Amino acid sequence: MKSLNMKKILIICVIACLGMQSCTGVEEIDRSLQDQSMLAVLFAQTSPEYAANNIQTYKTATLNLDIALKDNNWTAALEQKGNFQEKPAAIILDVDETVLDNSAFQARAIINGTSYPTGWIEWGNEANAPAVAGVKEFLNYADSKGVSIFYVTNRVVELKEATKDNLIKLDLPFDQSINPLMMKGENGWGSDKTSRRELISKDYRIILMAGDQITDFISLDESTVSTQQRLELSNKYRDEWGTKWFMITNPMYGKWEGAIYNNIYPSSQEKAKELRFQALDPK
Ligand SMILES: [Mg+2]
Image (cartoon, rainbow, N blue to C red; front, side):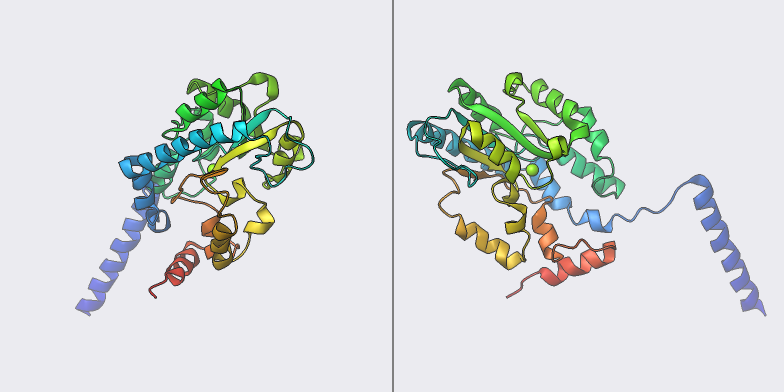
């Protein structure tokens, strides 16, 4: 009898506690999935290793820019066709994690236990992302050589003005006369950047490209394959890396993660964690 009363008291206490929690709005946030990104975000935010890697990438890009300018037969775009030798030179850069550093948004996602796109538009509209290390020097050099600079991004068109403001605020080259910022959803452009590269290649010789995703260089179709097939793409384009194509390391997010899930994002956090675990290779 005594233990039955104790049980009743315990149940009442638990119910009361739950009630208080919902009344005060203090609800348990499940951060377990986002927490798995913590070291990647801290690497981007705190390590000189990350910054130095980006500086060396853009320094190498600067050296290759000079070589490309002197060689009229040099093009960096698979989409470049026909006679391009006499066209003016241009370079194409992705924006997020290539020019603008959004690691603060990733930090917020971990702290709040939220996932993209929650908070993304708000972050973009703040127009306050810092520049990736080394990119400003590289872009200023390209600009000084008369090279046109295009920013081809999969940010939604709603963020066009804020993105432009952010780039200008950082004092990065932005030639208003050529509409240098090409967003997803603008002019019918989808996630695949191929059509935007094609369009630029009609008027320019694309001499160099930089990005943090393989889709910043090749088509979405070609890259939407298994993790093993994606790895093989790095070998397929071995000649381009470090000469015409420059990849910024992004350990925080990307289509590489989607490939872990067989390119179908799981509907639950638990399933995502399970598939990540299964993808580990202990040899
Ligand atoms: Mg990017």
